[in-house]
Every structure is written in structure tokens, then in C-alpha cells.
Image (cartoon, rainbow, N blue to C red):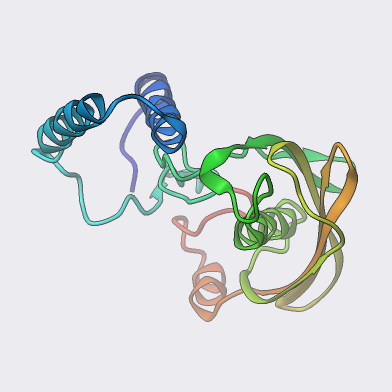
Length: 217
């Protein structure tokens, strides 16, 4: 359980948000740099020294999710939306219209075919988006199946993703989603999400620590 006050959470966000963004920019720059070899070796030594300094006080094996007493939580280690995960773009997902929506940018770190987003990265994004749509609609669950149809290449750069619930039956929810680039629709996805047994049991018991349908920050 997260014992931090809202003010303390805001302070951590202000501290780690820019820090993680600096790491993202480092990754992008490292992929594309053409500086001389001596500069690369010097940068490597400096990065290794910084890594050793930061490694001196690890919190735990993974970030996980810190839950507050109101059921909401911080998934700051998440690979898609994580504030503290430099792998994450990250996506800021908002509830809009019939589901959820996010506008984001994917650069050099997410390349597959030249100039294009790797198909697995697109699957990662849509998995998160469909799951968020299910949760936002009050039908949370874990991914059971995910099917993608790649309509055309997705160029690196600015993208928009949307997702919504198509139907639900008991603990099962079917969701759909899309990714659009400046060239139009590039990927469609559909997925089945199932509320896991542990969550059903927690809800039935009235456990206050059970996450609400849309609880990630």
C-alpha cells in the first residue's frame, strides 16, 4: 500500500518525470550519434559511473503498482504508460467519447523496418489501450487474446491510438482499437479480457485494496 500523501506523489512525479525523459533522450541520441570513438568511450564510462551511483539504493526487484487506500495506484514501471520507465513512450491515456484515446510519438528506439515502428511495439501499445478501455468502461480484465491486423506500415513519428469496448458477458470483455498516423489507419486490434479469479474473490469479499476499474496513474 502507498502511504505517500498527494503532495508527496506530486513531488515524486516532478522529480522522476524529467529524469526518465532525460534517459529516453539518451537512448534516442545513443542510437543516432556519430561522434568520434573517443567520445563514445568517454560517454560509456560516464554512464557506467552514473548507473553505479543510482544502483546504490534500489527499491525492489520491479516497480509493480503502489496502491492507495482509495484503490487507485501508480504503475510507474509499466512498459507503455510508466512515468519511471524509459522504455515507455510514455502514453498519456484519456477517456474520450466511446472509450479511450492517446496521442504520442515513437522515435528511433521503436524502429522495426527502416523508418517504421516495429510491429511488436504496436501490439504492446494496443494491448495497453484495449485493457485501459475495458477498465474505463467498468469491465477490467487481463488479456486473454489479442489479434492485430496491420493495414499499412506505421511510420515513426506522431501517432494516435483509440480503443473501446465492443461487448461484455459476465467476466469477459471484448474490446477493439486502432492506431492512426498521418497516412491514416495503420493497425486494427481486437482482444478478449477476463477478470481474473483473484480480483473476483477480492471484489466479493469487499477488499478495499482491490483496484478500481481504472486505477493507474
